[in-house]
Image (cartoon, rainbow, N blue to C red):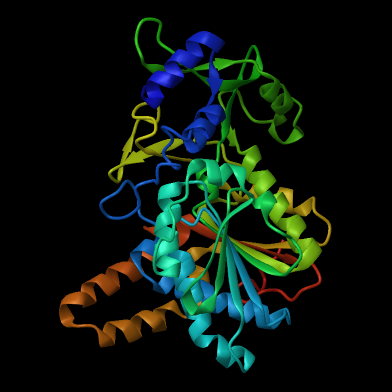
Length: 395
C-alpha cells in the first residue's frame, strides 16, 4: 500500500488530519516515509543542500566552531552533535577541518567526537561509510528504535562517532557544538486561517468521497482555539493565514537546556524569516520542481519555512542562554572569509572547473539564491562571549 493510499484509508476511518500530522507521518513512517527511506539529496535528487554543493561550507562551520571553542575557553576535547545529518557530508567536512587546523588553535591535536541523530538505515550506512571508511554491519530499524545508542565507531581523524535515534538519548554532560542545517524546515507545521464567523480555524487534510485524492478543508480544533487566545494574533485581519511548528520549538528548547547545563553552542541554519509570517509556506519538491504536497506522498520532500521569531521566543524561555541573530547566510559566510577561500580554490583548479567554483559561491551567497533567504541563528550560554560573526546581532 502506498503512503497516499494509507492516508486516504486512515482519514476515511478516523476523520480529517492536520497538515502537521501529515508531515509527521511522512517523516516517521518506517515503511513508506520519505526520510526513513533516505531522502533524495543532490543534483539528481529532489533538492540540494549547501554541504552537497561544496566542502567549503563545512570547512567554514568547522573553522567557526574552533573560533567559538577558543572564545568560550572550552576544554580541548571537541564534541559535535548534528541533527538530520543526511549523507554525513557536513559532519565529514567539519571533522576534517577541525582535525587539520585544530592543532594550530590548541597547540596540540584536539580529541574529537561526534553524535549523529538519525533514523534512516540508508542514511546511517552512507554516514558510516563516509566517516568511518566502511559499513561494519547494516543497521536494522529494530536496532535503531530499540537501542538509545545503536552504533559506535572510530573514524576520520580518530574521532569517536556515535549514532542515536533521538536527541533525548544523548548524554548532556559535556560542552557540545550542535549543528542543524536544513533540519527544522522538515519538521511538522500546523496551519490556521482567521474567519469572520468562527475566528481562527485549522487547515486540515480530508479525502475525496470516492477516490484516493486528498484536499484541504478547515475545522475548529483545540489548536485553533489556542490561537484565538493568543494576543499576538488577535488584531490580524480576517483571511490571514499563519503557520506554527511546535516541534521546532521543542527541539530548540531542548538544545538550549543542554547548553545552559553543560556549555557549548548551537548553530541553526535554515530558510525562513525573523518575523511573524502571514504566508503559508508548506510545499513539496520532487526532482527540484515544486509539486502538489498532497500527491506522491513519501516520494517528495515536504518542507516549510522556519519561523526564527518563534525559535527566539522558545530560547528566551530557557534561563541562562542567549540567542544571537539570526543573520543572513551570506553575512555569516562572508565574515568567515568564504570569498578568500573560493579565490584560493579558483586559482588552483583547472580552467574547466573554475565555473563550478563561481557557481558554488554564488549559490551560497547571492541574495537571489541561498544568501539572504537562509538565516543563521546561534545559541550560547548567557555568560559566554558573543560568538564571532554575531557581534551586534544578539537578541
